[in-house]
Image 1 (tube, rainbow, N blue to C red):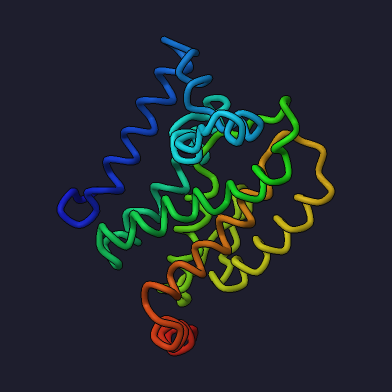
Image 2 (cartoon, rainbow, N blue to C red):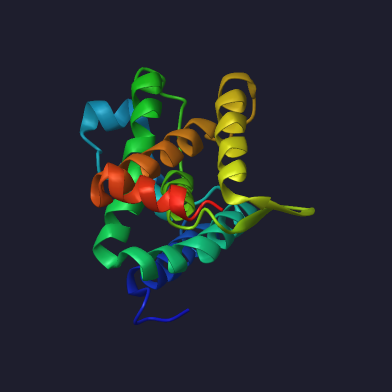
Length: 203
């Protein structure tokens, strides 16, 4: 980690760890204060939880998995795009990814969401646009996958499980976060600019 190249990434990384661990082991009330609850977001104007929910996690494994992904891609992306664009992509993806869940569950008082998955998916796909030439790995599968193919697989998988899975994972947030990362990067760097860069570096 290089603070000069990736100051915002380091601050978010450490802050997310600190707040999540504090909620796990010291004061669980912070989870209730920060969590996204669409029912009360709409009725009580708790719009800030679209951001604060990204700093808390459901359990230690959820936290470690998200922060591992953040570690591998966030620092590198910020060193490419700079701190301001990184903030826009990360928090923009996080907020946009929450919108479908809020609209879908605005009348469901039992639905809660937390975690940084939307923002992390956003930076992952922004990174793929800048570095289509690298390979990525799926956990426990030591086979290099070209990043564009990994991205396609990720989107298809998220789309499928969002409609068929019965678990408590916010697959919609993964999908919409990834799409938001792509869209925000194109807006920031121009459709022709980033797409030409992607194509030119694809091979």
